[in-house]
Amino acid sequence: TYYKPLLISQQQHVQVTQAYFDLIERAEHSAAGRGGSKRASERSGAAGQPVEASALKAELGRLLHQQREEEMGLLQRELEQITEEANKRIEKGNGAIKELKA
Image (cartoon, rainbow, N blue to C red; front, side, top):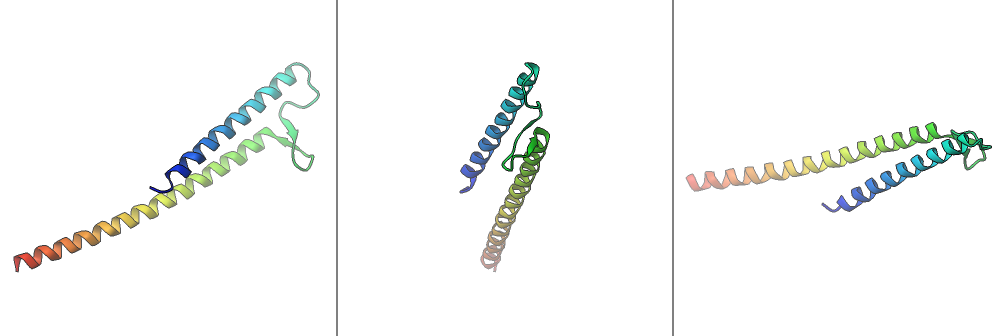
């Protein structure tokens, strides 16, 4: 199918993003263990506000869920198209059989 490379790319992106968050979390925990100046579960966001790692993980989970829902919808539409095409071919074949019997 034409969108398979896109799905693979998206899966790779998800894996890289998760690895990135894991790396940040490990770095924050090690900095906290050494008495670092930042809280272990915070880092600065775009607006200068601290962003909780748990909030980032929750957002990532929400985006992953949304991606799965979109993928399921896409696959469902494709299945319906294939089923419709198969039914048309079956009807055409049945018509041809009836003509041959007549």
